[in-house]
Amino acid sequence: MSKVPIALTIAGSDSGGGAGIQADLKSFSANKVYGASVVTALTAQNTLGVNAVHSVPPEFITAQLDAVFSDLNIEAVKIGMLSQVSVIEAVANSLKKHEAKNIVFDPVMVATSGDSLLDEDAVEAVKTILMPIADLLTPNLHESAKLTNTSLAKSNIEMVEQADMLLKDGAKAVLIKGGHIEDKDCADLFKTTTQEEWVNAKRIATNNTHGTGCSLSSAIASNLAHGMSMHDAVCKAKIWLTGAIQSSNELDIGQGSGPVHHFHNLWSK
Image 1 (tube, rainbow, N blue to C red):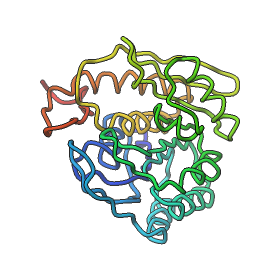
Image 2 (image 1 turned 135 degrees about the vertical axis):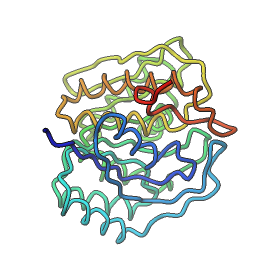
Image 3 (image 1 turned 45 degrees about the vertical axis):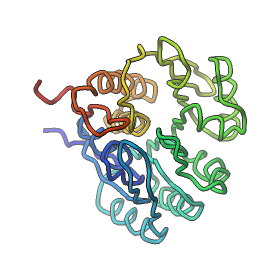
Image 4 (image 1 turned 90 degrees about the vertical axis):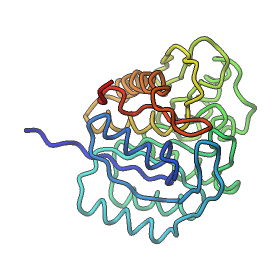
C-alpha cells in the first residue's frame, strides 16, 4: 500500500471556513493528500468580509515550521497570507533551512470582498524574498498588477506582459488567474521562460467564489505532491476547481460570497 503524500499550507486562518488554511486543508483532502498547516494570521471573517486580522509572531511561525519539517516528509508547500515583512522573512528562512520543495506561492493581498490583507511595505519583500524561492507564483489580476506596479490587465496581451515582468523579477513560473476579465471563459495564463499556455474553463454564474484562489493553489500543490509535472498539476487543478465552483450552489453557506464545494467529487448527492 503506497504512502499518502503530505502537503503543507502556510497561511492565515479564515473563521468562516471558506478560504485560507481551512480551504487549503479541504483542497488537500479532496485531492487525496494529507494536509499539515502553519498558521501565520488569525482573521475574524465570514462570507461578507474581513472584520479583523491578528498576525502570529514570527518566532512562533518559525517554531511551527520547525516542528512540521522535523517530523513530516513534506512533498509540497502552499504559501498564502503573509501580512508583514517579518513574517515573510521568517517563512523564507525556514523554507530554505529545511530545503522545501514544490513551493506554490499564492500572494494573497486583497480578499474577494476587497479587504486589504497585506501591509504596503510587505509588497517589495514578497518580490525580493519569496518570489525567487517559489516554484510557482499564482496571482490574480489585482495581485499581478500590484506586484508589477502596473494597471489592472484588461486583455490577454497585458496578462502576458505582466507575466514576463514577474519572470524577469525572479519568478520561476507564473499562473495569472484571469477570472476578473469579463468574458465567457475564465482564462488563466501559465507561463515560464520556455512555455506559455492558456488554461481555460467556462465561466460559471455563481456568487460562491470565496476561497477560489486558495483552493486552486492548494490543489496544484496536492498534484505536485503526487509527483505530477508543474504543467499537469496546474491543468488538473483547474478542472477540479471548475467542478467545485459549478457545485457550489449546493452548499448554501452564508449571506455573502459563499465557498466553493471542495468535496463535490466525494459527497453523495
